[in-house]
Length: 254
Ligand SMILES: C[S@@+](CC[C@H](N)C(=O)[O-])C[C@H]1O[C@@H](n2cnc3c(N)ncnc32)[C@H](O)[C@@H]1O
Image (cartoon, rainbow, N blue to C red; front, side):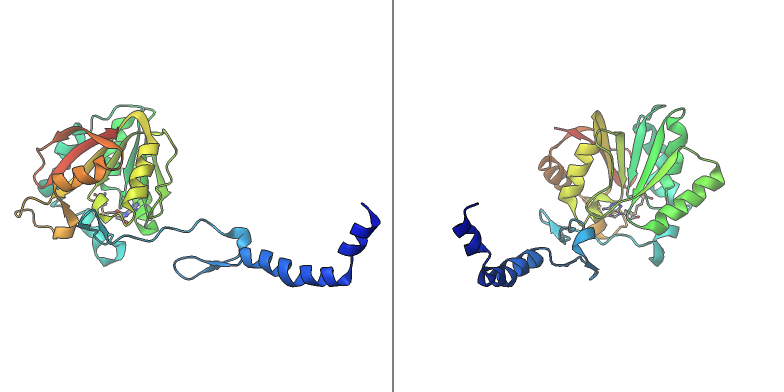
């Protein structure tokens, strides 16, 4: 380094300017971030922000998630459910096989998880994903009581089911898609999690049918489902119209 350059940059005035301009700019660029919910997260542990929740998607009002504490957990296990939704008719339509990895996404307290688990043995697993830890705790307790061992639980986030890529033969969604506050990243995550020949089984209360005694925003029409799923990289594989209250539509990756 020549001596005139050295003496120029070593002058106290330049040192002062660097301290006044450069250091604050660097510190400002790493400022503490505030995540939804109001918690301040220092830069060293900052996580990616959750995108804002949607209240509407493609002309549909998104329903609030069913809460464990508002009677939801009990309603999901109601005795009348077999009569009203006929899970005994739904299950064979899923065509489960031993050894498969199945995800029940938005599994609640595991009504379908515990029915599916014996159908993928030996060697198969049912992964129950939900955003409410209380639902998952309830599922784990019920699996323990029933002696069902091939069940895993995963605490998902509203925009991320935390599934491994190329891991699922089947993803089941029963009465949950209409609650997704982040439908686009959830659909993208499901596409990524499916094995190449995997399918998503979508079950939704029929929006076209006024006889189905469920609030409007908790129902969906086939036309609306098709609009949303086709726009997000899925194509209809097959469908079954034999459930009393619900659509059952199977979607594969386009
Ligand atoms: C109406 S319950 C249905 C539960 C279960 N599928 C059944 O049929 O018994 C909907 C569930 O979806 C969950 N849920 C909502 N949004 C979710 C999301 N983004 N990821 C995972 N679970 C979600 C809720 O916490 C709730 O337990």
